[in-house]
Picture (tube, rainbow, N blue to C red):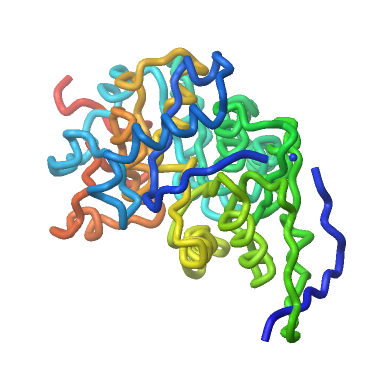
Length: 371
């Protein structure tokens, strides 16, 4: 039994690249040369793969890349917020669980951000959520009463487009998207053509003897992010592109196990969509979101900042804190999101931030013990 496709809406074609043939998962990095010098995208892709392959062989199954020396030491409770603030130039904040929960702002956030800005600190907001574009996230900040510039926001949807630009992905190739509107918007802004996305959510595959499912041979990249309209059609189409189009790149915005659609429980995250294609293609994706170092390297180059002068603030150990450690930054875990103190102090947990505290508004009250 083969299949027949029932397509509710025809594909919208908009732009492609080539992909690694290795089965390992890679941490991505970017440097000034990659951003500013246009070289053959395929050669650059090979360089990224070779440089990161050795890092990944030891930690393949967990998608954990490189941990800093601080990862082996026990986290310390934050006691002197002023000292931490004075020791860095830039604070990178995760959003959900740090700035807000769902659509509700966490207490004390506006005053905390105002304090940091008054001290001349650069603020950057990085999220693995790919369902929105940077512009859409800017509107969410505004709705919650926060004044945040779009240039201060970096979502994994943007990271996918930025990564393709960094390797000179050909503009005459197409990208198949398993994901939501945020990815499509960022790809279009970057000048890339795409197909798939939400409009493929209503397409079904019906079993019928002798049917052969066609796919676009000009697709050179498959980008997978969180997708509430995920279905078998998308899995099959993405699988055909990755397996049958020579050199087709397999990109993931993140591999988060869970996400927070409501504040009542945890929901299956983008990693579940990525995992489906890993299983069908027997290929590991290039991950552009946290804890990959790609966004950290991008930010350091964009703003001209030294990574040791950055503090990463987040509520997840395996994404936020590891992201900071992989980038050589200071790290602060807040307990206002998914990680509890018992989870942090569990003997089986090997990811230890430099500091931890209840919420970022503790910056307003924690002072040095001695006057």
